[in-house]
Length: 188
Image 1 (cartoon, rainbow, N blue to C red):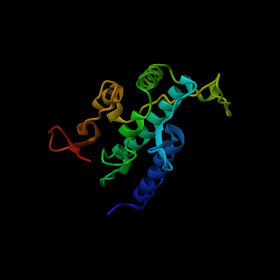
Image 2: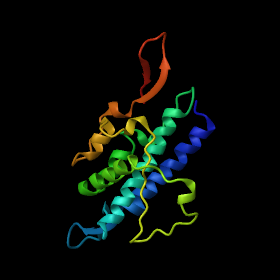
Image 3: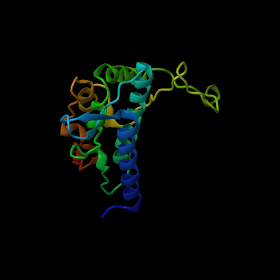
């Protein structure tokens, strides 16, 4: 039985992932199958006019999934799973990242990795209101999920030309220790 918060999280994040896929990562393209038939609409990966926007978006997409992975890892005693982190889900993270060009994914991952090593801004250094435009983009930069460690299976799967995330990369790590043995792992 799911906790009410878990059900709501799944419902809203599934909707958010669907909207990200439909409104940000794909565009509708009309195709005519035969000369006398009507047009059929098909979703195709978006062509980004400015690759810098795609890179910034890629970092925030990583941040979206990092938050979900982190929530799974820290949600407490009972087992909670986020449906869109399952490889069988229509809006699974691997499928969404595959809609970004390989070069954009690599640049986004590099941008996040680069900001991981920067000293963080103090609260007084960050303006209360930021204007985000073509010349001043904002990037996600603080990965909290253990499963998204740079060099880990999930990270490496996102770096491949054809996104390939092994199921083992999605196993939820825990801090539970049984009588001094190695930590146990819960499988999603």
